[in-house]
Length: 288
Ligand code: GUN
Image (cartoon, rainbow, N blue to C red; front, side, top):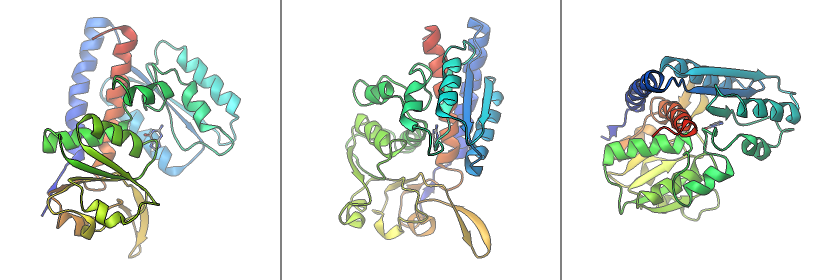
């Protein structure tokens, strides 16, 4: 049976370190890092994420600013709010929860956030940095995945990594990070031929497609490390369940290690958001 990679414990450890850093920033520099989260509309899953983010921000000693806007908020009003947050010295990180309502241009909004206050790593400048000198802020979900992979496997050099899913939020930045870590990387997607055979070549298999239990154990190379980014709500046996993109039971029987859902990637993503906020606060203030 596979080792279970405990994202909850890793996230707690990271938050403990961050809380110490925040205390030192307050004492030594009079700096309290602040994170602003903007939610447009009432998507229930997004509301849960935003509540968790705000709670954990305060728990590590940072300041949290929450902006909940109606679903019919105009793009101009959202851009005006972002401008005011860009100019607010108490705010060092700005996150606009995605997806946005269809009448708002997502890319315009993402790039309106100052790249110095971007804590998602979605701004074009930070995407460019990640893919060139590696010196920008890194998207939270893939950063959390990389931290768990390194703490479980150590040096990733020479490993074969297959990422299923080509999103801007996970698949593409995950590929950039694993490439920087000297893996041989393939991004697979819905048009990939013989996906099963490709997945079976992977020492590291990352599933990030948003399809419940799409990857069965028969696609997993024996001993591989499986990272399941999916968070899918399904109705099963009359119950509401949270399941990943990997069929956990069959994959855990073959893999060397695997992240569970819930309790794997999810908690690490939020901890990495706090990490990015601290990083941006230090960068803005010129603190090493
Ligand atoms: N929606 C789902 N994941 C994310 C994320 O990492 N950042 C933002 N801003 N929205 C999301």
